[in-house]
Amino acid sequence: QVQLVESGGGLVQAGGSLRLSCAASGRTFSAYAMGWFRQAPGKGREFVARISHSGASTYYVDSTKGRFTISRDNAKNTVYLQMNSLKPEDTAVYSCAADPSYRRSTYSDSRYYGYWGQGTQVTVSS
Image 1 (cartoon, rainbow, N blue to C red):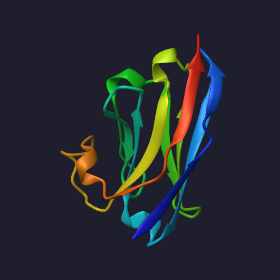
Image 2 (tube, rainbow, N blue to C red; image 1 turned 60 degrees about the vertical axis):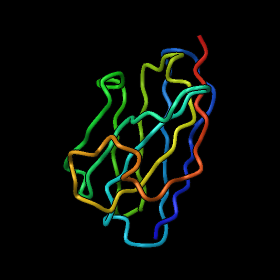
Image 3 (cartoon, one colour; image 1 turned 180 degrees about the vertical axis):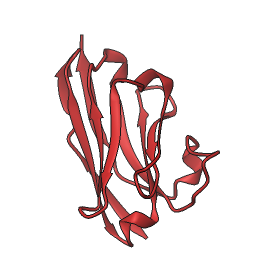
Image 4 (spheres, helix red, strand yellow; image 1 turned 90 degrees about the vertical axis):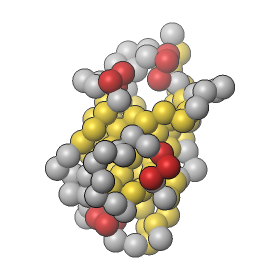
């Protein structure tokens, strides 16, 4: 098993930046691909980004391409989400998740991520 704890959320003006961190403990961090998801009030959970076990491959939802960057440091057991040019529609609770599989076809499907953090709130004001 792996335990995940997010940090770095907060209130920022539109156009600003935030960097989210997700620290993992427990089983070997590199045994998991890592994803970020978000959930806005009254909406379902949305895939944001995924990074492969080694960090060599990344995937993004179209609405964040060019603005968000996912990265990981396996030596520090941490995955990051750098968010630039933030928009009010990015407001949500952001959660990191771990997927032990090497499937690529299901990278955006939250059902395949077995471990989740508690989430961190990101609020973007206009």
